[in-house]
Structures are given as C-alpha cells and as structure tokens.
Image (cartoon, rainbow, N blue to C red):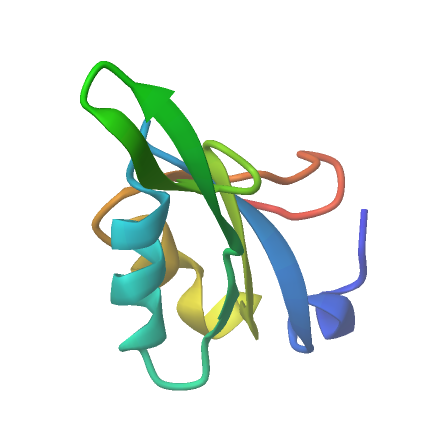
Length: 95
C-alpha cells in the first residue's frame, strides 16, 4: 500500500471512458482547475460509398490520461461526464 504522502502528490492516472466518449470526457476534465488531460486523437482518410472522407478517432479507444492531485480531485474526476472509472491498483490506492 502506498503511504499517504504518495496520494498527496500530483500524478498521472489512466481513466476509462464510456464508449466513444473520450473527447467529451477530455473536454469536461479540461474545465477543471488543476487537472491536465492527455487524450490524443488521430485524423485519417477512409473510403466510403460517398467517396473519401476524413475521420477522427481516439488514439487509445476507451481511455484517456489525466494529471491531478488524487486525494483532492478523485471524486470530481471520477464523476465527470464521459468517465466510467479511474483505473488503479486496489493495493496501491485506498478507496
């Protein structure tokens, strides 16, 4: 188990988003004070029946990353629109 002092530091966390909601979750998290978000998207062309079209998708479908102070922000982050839950090791971070 991590000491309490480890939870008092700002760190990066992997967040599970609802399907196809990475961009929505990232937008809501970016509005929070002291929360940094990493959610890269890929833009590419694909042939369709209507011709070649541009598409944009998450580089990591279903996941995004956020840097925040866990003990202060985890409830707010976990309940942000589009977020399913914060991935964590149960042994490492108490609930």
